[in-house]
Structure formats: structure tokens, C-alpha cells
Amino acid sequence: MSIKEIVVPDIGDFDSVEVIELLVAEGDVVQVEDSLITVESDKASMEIPSSEAGKIIKLKIAIGDNISEGSVILMMEVDESSKASAALTEKPQEERNTSKPEPQKESSHEKMAAAKSTPAKASAGKASGDKPSPTAKIDEVRFSKAYASPSVRRFARELGVDLGNIEGSSRKGRINRDDVKGFVKKTMASGASGGASLGIKPMPEIDFSQFGETENQALSKINKLTGEFLHRSWVTVPHVTQFDEADITEMEAFRKQMGKEMEREGIKITPLAFIVWAVVASLKAFPRFNSSLDASGENLILKKYFNIGVAVDTPNGLVVPVIKEADQKSLVEISQEIRELAIKARDKQLKPSDMQGGCFTISSLGGIGGTRFTPIVNTPEVAILGVSRSKMEPVWNGKEFEPRLVLPLSLSYDHRVIDGADGARFTTHLSKMLTDIRRMMV
Image 1 (cartoon, helix red, strand yellow):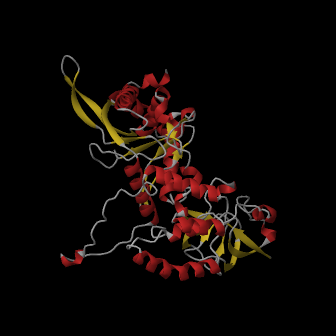
Image 2 (tube, rainbow, N blue to C red):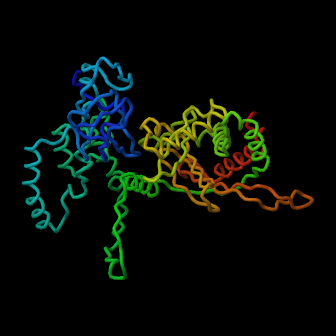
Image 3 (cartoon, rainbow, N blue to C red):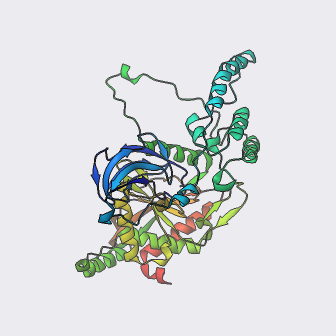
């Protein structure tokens, strides 16, 4: 028997994730790949599996802790003779020592100094015309998690800058003084505080219980982060939504025919797979839809790869896993990947890498209902496709009305990059691809 440290495996590009659930206790016996904890990033929650089989001696973390790759989760008594270890996770000590450092937190001395200076700043503000403290809008939780040195933190506080709004340019994303200065210059030039201040008065606080019985229900972390992300996208991106329809009668007939032929093999081709294929063909025809604006907003980054995000509704909120290199996959491969990603999303098994690198997002509500909707652009992408429920409609063919299966489409796009004419051209092209799937082969 030997005692081993079980550590956090590779979690992608995230500096840290929050522990939201402990799935084991001291004294429990676990097997390889048994889930130990549930963590939550800014996009999804996921379970961390065990890399060893054995008895848990001591838990080294608690709910609410922020952990990163290489952090010790627990101590485990392992039977070396069983050779039951999985070659999944554990890294040599030397590699763990060189893993990405956790964001530095303010020292206790700095925190005490900041706490002592707060009353003085508040009183000074009152004495100078009730001006708010320059740090009044700093989110302390995000500020503390930012990856920056104590001196940069002090500098940011002096300027009233929330480090949580800044992307670091130094090694491993570390924020330096120039990053803070650049953020201040950009904010002053734009005339807004981080793009979020619109001069709108906050909603009044209302006691709804005066009208009847109420119940408070806390939003999940994913709900809150998704709300912040969508709000930022809505107020910073000029949205336009183009509506169109596609006659998918022939496509559905072909899909059902192939479904019968592949039924014995357990293969099912979904309508969404055809839509992914058609979107890729349309992105190739209209490259501006497969782009992003750079940080300055003055240059367009055209992407030569085709990674398609698919919005998935889960009990914990909306997540968007990404089908990588969709242009190089068959309908069957795309269908299987969509199914696998959806299962992982609902089981909290998505990794951060599963949700990164998207070029264009598809939000399909056809399985739920509705006629049309206006999706919000998934920035930094410049467009998103909304798909509603298809229905049979009478369509005039020049001689008579005939029943055709019609699919409603809603394309929202960033009007800074795409004008209305190109928006209409894109949906027209997409509709043609879905109406006659042979066009996708050309």
C-alpha cells in the first residue's frame, strides 16, 4: 500500500474553476474513473474523475474552493499490486511544479490597507460633491481571481479599474501595468465603462410579496454567467435578424430513407446534421460570416476552419459544445457527435475544450416548438442561426397548391460586419442548400 495525491487533470485554458460539489467522502473506496468532485467554469460544470483506485484518506479541498490543473484533490491509499491506475491524469511532480500558476491573491497586508483606506475614501468622496469612490464599481470576486501581481492590483485600484474586465498580454495571460493603462485609454476613448455603462437608471427595488405569496430561487452559476454574457453581447453588438424559410420536403424524405437503411447498424441521421452541413457550405460561400472582429474593432479576422457550435439545453442552463472541423465530417459522423456532445452536456461531462473555438452557432428549438425567434449573437462570432419547428404548408408550384414541409430560419448577425443585403443572401443560399441537398456536393 502507498499514499498518493490525486490531482486536477488538464482542464483546458482556464486558470481556475470552482468546486461546487463533493461526490465522495473520507473513507470511501473508489475505482478508476469514478467521479470525485464537480467543478464549474464560466461556461459549464463538469465532473473530475479519479485516476487511481483505492481508499480516500483525506480530502484536501472544500466546496467553494478555486482549483486549477495540478491542485491536490485528496490523498488516497492505493494498492500498488493491483495496478488499477488509469493512465489518464496524474502528472510527474516536476511537470506539476511547472504548470500554470494560480492567480496571485492580495496579501493580508494589502487587504488590511485597502480596508483601512475605504472609510477615508468614502468621506473624501462626500466632501467633494458626493463623487463615488473610483473603485466603487469593482467586482471584488472577479478582481481577486484576476492573474496579476500585487503592484498591478494596487495600480488598478488607484485607477478604479476592475481587473476582471482585462485580458492579460504577458506570459500565461498575466495582467501587467500596460494592460491596465490600455484598458483605461480604450474606456476613455469609447466613453463607456467597460462597454456596460449606458447611463440608464437601475430598476427600482420592489417588494413583490405585498401583492401575494412569493418564493426566492437562486440562479445557477451558469445561468448568471450566461445572462452576463448575453447582456454584454446584446448591448455591445448592433443586432439585425433576417427571417427565411427552407423547403425541406426532399431532405426529410432522404433522411428517413437513410434512417431505415442504417437502422440495423444503430445509426440515426438527425435533421440538425443536414443543417450543419448546409451552414458550412454557406460559410464557404460567404466568408465574412466565418469571422470575428479583433480587439480594436478595426480589423476582421477571417477564419479558414469551420467549427460549428450547437446550443444544448440542460437542467443547469444553456451550453454550446462545438463540432470541430465540421467541413471534414460526414452526415453520420456529425449526427453521432451531436448526440455524444448533448449527452455529455446533460451529464456535466463537457470539458472546456469541448466549448472553445466556435466559428458560428446554431440554436435549434424545433424539438420544443415555436414559429420563429431572434437569437442573440454568440460573440466573438458575428452570426447565429435560429431553427424553429418545421410544418406542412400548402405551396403554389405554378399549377396548384401542394403540401410541402417548411423549416423557419432566423439569422441574427453583427451589423458592424454584415449588412442587410449579405444577410439576405446568406439565408437564401442556406435555404437552397437545404431544399436541394445535392447542391452541398458541388
